[in-house]
Length: 107
Image 1 (cartoon, rainbow, N blue to C red):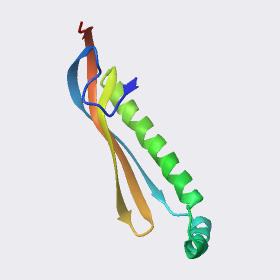
Image 2: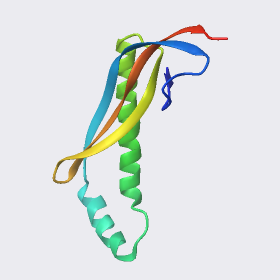
Image 3: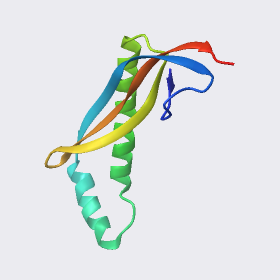
């Protein structure tokens, strides 16, 4: 499955199928919160949160690709990510894009 942030895949005709989504909601871990609070005093990267967001991004993207496979897509174009707070201490990471079928190569 080709996944790209561009609107098209160079050299191919594309047939738009539908918008596809993948999301995950993650809550803060108490241990990570304590360490983040301490780290905020001296500054620097919050590694625990960085890892949590990287895992969430990978999971959301995987779910988006699964949604595209359900449509028998060859690729997902114009991929974007967004986050939102769902409740105190929890956030959603959403991946979305346009599922497409690849056509003949344009010369």
